[in-house]
Image (cartoon, rainbow, N blue to C red):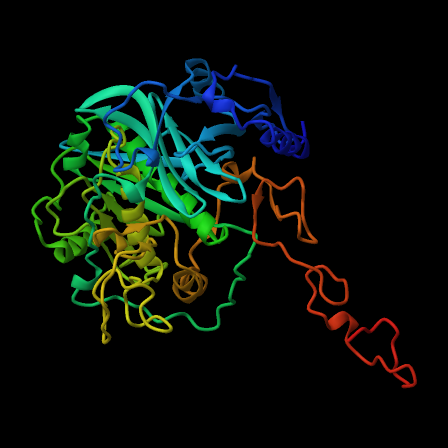
Length: 515
């Protein structure tokens, strides 16, 4: 079956799914392969149905901000066994709104990703085959990612200006077997997060290379930022000394972060794990408590000077830790694209993936995406140096200006969650994108290469908006190329093709000119 046929079926089914989750949906498993050999479920798969049980431990203040769901075991089993590349997931949102998610598989790791075990007997390495299934939401009006693991689901969804999280539900420390979709802005418990960027004695800002060609924002070739991940001994023990559980947790987190950057930066970059190091013996960072700046410096030096780590493939390196005593929620060097000495950061106070009575998964994504944002070139949104001054007033201004912090819904590089009544959506403010991330990645990111073939071989990128003159009905993901006709009727033209003399009495008159 062609991609066009698959997408046509997807569109047709959207019109008939408004009641799908208030009844038990018969699982539909019509399966096909498209021309690239990718398995497709071309009928909606009713994985979820709304739970009718009276649940008292919902994670939000307002009961209407949460929707408790239960899974269809048959669909769940099929999903884990068949690994469809594309499929539709009917979903009921809090408040009762129904929609259908179009899911496209993507992977945030290299096909040859290795894990390194730092043991008391030295380093042991192995090729690793991740077990998680990761999907990017391909709807035009819905963004986010869903991660499926054995018995677990982690999702972050942005829909109609609201940030939602999907995950397992526990009551009083007991697993209920249910899942909950809830608005994170109304969560009962919001983890506090302050970044340690401003505590660094100096910000490493290498000069931007001169003479480099600027990539267009809608550059159709997605470049990969290869990330080496480090998991400390404390975190390894928090997973019961289970290496696989630690790695799957880290990859689930990185996958959600990659989706954010791909979507928000219009597929300018993706993020892929190139190497994962796990400390199965005490790590050299444990001695740092309440001193984030020194810990960050020790971390980057470890990866520069330890012969077991120094030559591992990477564009940047990031430490993931569940420690709560580092003195910060995270810290990273600023504007260090392709700087091998300083392209580093760490995220701390991270939560496990198995408990979602709080907004843990979104918290994890926000922390790591925030710290990556510093590496890629962005300051905080309350920084005085933005064009026009601070982007928001959620926190005391950084720099030579003043403001009055007030609660509001902020973005990834903000502290809006730190103000009572405020929250953060997992997206970047346009000023952050256009004044920091995009120009700095384009200008400094000379080391970023193209993605592994397997990561994109089953995706077809193109213009997905029907109003555009270059609309491609077979495209699955929008590549930012959508455009309109100019005055001359040329698709994507600048009007120059019909610009000239329009006076019929002139010797250089051209009847094709309209301007």
